Amino acid sequence: MLSYIKTLKKHYKTEHPYKDPFKVLISCLISQRTRDSVTYPAAERLFKRYSSPESMSKANVKTIASLIKPAGFYRQKAKRIKKIAAYVSKYGVPDSVDELLKLPGIGRKCANIVLAYGFGKPAIAVDTHVNRISKRLGLVPWNSTPNQTEQALKKMIPKRYWNDVNTLFVKHGQEICKPINPKCDYCPLRSVCSYANQKHKS
Ligand code: SF4
Image (cartoon, rainbow, N blue to C red; front, side, top):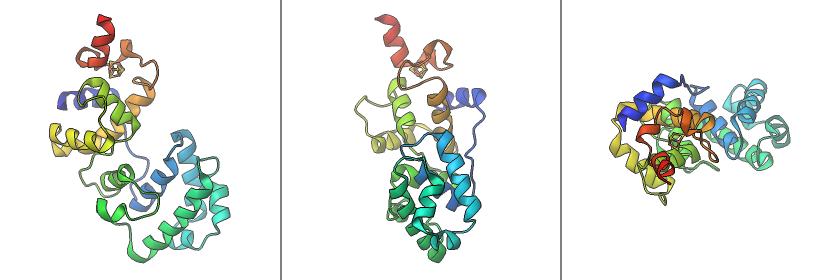
């Protein structure tokens, strides 16, 4: 598995767009059911208008919604953003999965994203790309849940590479290992991939 990570590292230069834990947290919330090409411009509009958790916590929900639109569920996300900003302005961004999960709209994927890219702690955030590619490669069973995939990958990969998994697999999933019609002919992992081998045999 480590060799897969090293192979992908040669192909993709990836980095999370934010390092500040609050920005990582809010951008992850905006990204839910939303493409990156919509998420990051929306996040930038929001951060430009409200540069601190304090100012965001005092913002009008409708204004937040108008800034992050057309992100999916932007009205619901705007309410959550205001609540999270209020929490963070008092207590700071939590740096544990359990505490992050208590914030409105924050699930395990975003909690791990915040740990990995906001705090630099080892974490594996399993989103649809990471789960799909792990299944296709044959690393986990087809019915593996994101949580099960996270636990399985943690056993296979040395801790110092955990933070590479999400950014590399997301990039690979967007460019080559797409949900429909993966471009296996162009994939650097083709020779070790269960899905590609099965397809070749059939
Ligand atoms: S060979 Fe195909 S299915 Fe396997 S990881 Fe590459 S693109 Fe995805």
